[in-house]
Length: 453
Image 1 (cartoon, helix red, strand yellow):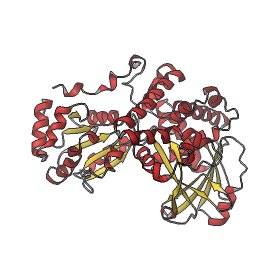
Image 2 (cartoon, one colour):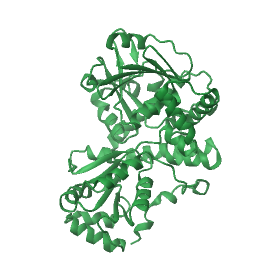
Image 3 (cartoon, rainbow, N blue to C red):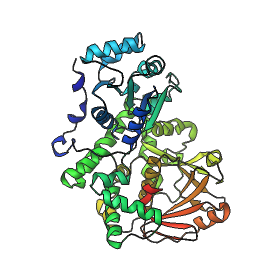
């Protein structure tokens, strides 16, 4: 049984020779993985996230760098391994089976046991509880592309309180800058955000150009690698189309035929939903006569799969803002802006030139949603009875922060003023293509600095 050769990621993509897969892309989650190892909590670590956000790669790299050896098991493709969990799932038995099959020892503190695509084997997820209780000295990580969907199925016995969780998102813009070798620029942006002093024009223009580049390439690691290999946006688009096709395939594979059709219909409607002036999700756009009763579960499937980001409406903006969420009203953004651009079919020339286009407002909002989600913020927007609307409202500790998003340099808006008068937030941020600045509690922040919030 060839355990180490069961990972298909180097073989399944026909353009593999043009992509430097061995080039490491730094990820912020690496620090969280190191923290988990050093804390020795005794709990297994579950890494969740959409397909192809880099879960397998980052965990393999973690094992190579911080353990003497890694035993990798793909429970979706290795059916023999999955069958070991059908009977006795005590750690002692499971470790015996896996050691024999892998042909190498699994030692406490020395070996990383990596169970990939764990959603394909329910008993393996349940087994994590017993590793926590009976064998806390072992380091066990698990990951799955549709782990969020699997966990929320009623039949799953999820080991509540017995595992730690980490959600991996596509690269945010700062990670993209690192991948592009622009560490100094990322540092300069952070410093400017801290001081609210304008960047020199040359740096501001360079960062703006890279921001527009990021809108096209997005943050999916394979797309970033493809672009960097040949400086080709077309190569990045090839990868993005492959990912979008895989999303559709997952809907057919992991849902019933009836549910799959509803999920696809909701998913296909997202660009049209975002193109509206009022971006609140409307079921009638999915299907005439559509309703939450018909499509509500499909929306949740997309959300749990990490394919979309759900932004809930609030009518009041007091701490804690979560209790004022209107569960019947929300916006849906794509989990990655590059995928949205490809899915919507907006031209690369439009993105890179910055020329006027109505849909660019939706693309810009989606970008900001992606940056905020990667920071761990729950997404909310505010809407008042008199039709004023604010793009995002955050709670940072006990502070309420208002965020307005503008696609260009034109920044006139009534809604932000209405919100500030009504709720007196700690401060307000206006994201646009303008340079840094601050006046009367309103911070002007360039869009490329959204990762600093």
